[in-house]
Image 1: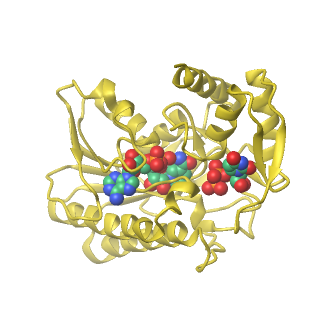
Image 2: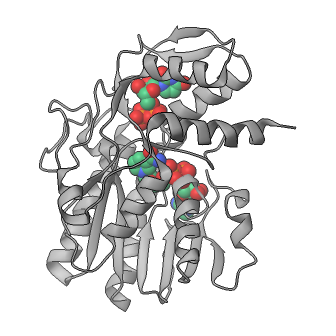
Length: 311
Ligand code: NAD
Ligand code: UDP
C-alpha cells in the first residue's frame, strides 16, 4: 500500500485513476482546484478511509509526504485551456516544478501527464516519441502545447540533475464517462448534441483525423508505466485507430439514433490536421495496447451522458 498523490484527481481522467488506485488499496490523495473537475466525479470515493481530497491550486507550492505522484492538474479541453492562457502556462510549469520539488524531497516516483499536443500539427505520421514536433509558439494553443513541452523538459532535467524517478506519458485523445457535458472536446460535444437532437458542430470540413482511446485503456497504461524498471523517456499512450471527425459525427448519430444534422463551422486556428500514435514503445516496454473498440467505448459514453442529461 502506497501513499499516492493524484493532481487533477477530480477531473475526467484523474477520477478514473483515483478509483483504480483506491481499488488497489493504495492511500490516494486527490488534489484539485475544481477549475474543470467536479466533486461528483469522486463522490463514491469520498467516504472511503483510503481516499483524501485536498482543494488546492497547484500553481502554489504544497508540502506532502507521498511515495508516488501522478501530475494531471491542467485543463485539457482547448476551450478551457484557452480561457485563461497565462493560468494554463502556470498550471503546467509551476505545477510540474511543485510536483518535482515534492518528488525530489521525499524520493517519490512522479508521472507527468503529457500530451500528443507536444507534436503540434505534426509533419510526421503516425507520431513516434522521437519526433520533435511542429508547434506554433505564438498561436492560441501554445499556452498548452508549450506549457506541456516545458514540463517535459523540467522532468528530464530533474531526472538528469537530481536523479528523480520520472515517467512521461504522452496521452492522445481520450474519452469516456465522467467527461463534463460542457467539456468542449469533440466526443462529449457530439454525444450531447446528438442526444438532444441538436446540430452536430463539425469544425472545418471534418476531414481532420484523431485516434480515440477509451479511458479504461488509458488508465491501464498509466498504471503499467508507473511499475518498476519502466523507461524514463516519453511513452505514447493512445489508440492507433485513426478516423476523421466527420466519420465520428456519423457514428455518434447512428449509435444514438439521433435526428441531428451535421453543420460545418470554422476550423479553429492551428487545429492539427492528422493525429495517430505510434505505440510500439508502449507495446514493447509496458506490454500494453488498447483493448476497447471505439464502437464499444462510445456506447458506454453515450449511456453515461444519457444519465447525466436526464433531469
Ligand atoms: P480535465 O480538465 O477533466 O481534468 C483536469 C483536472 O485538473 C480538473 O479536475 C481540474 O480542475 C484540475 N486542475 C486544473 N488546473 C489546476 C490547478 N492549477 N491546480 C489544481 N488542479 C487543477 O482533463 P483530463 O482530460 O482529465 O486531463 C487530465 C490530464 O491529462 C491533463 O493534464 C491533460 O493535459 C492530460 N491529457 C488528457 C488528454 C485527454 O484526451 N483526456 C489528452 C492528453 C493529455
Ligand atoms: N471538433 C469539432 N467539433 C466540436 C469540437 C471539436 O469538429 O464540437 C474538432 C476539432 O476541431 C478537432 C477535433 O474535433 O479537429 C478534436 O477536437 P478536441 O477539442 O476534442 O481535441 P484536440 O485533439 O483538438 O485537442
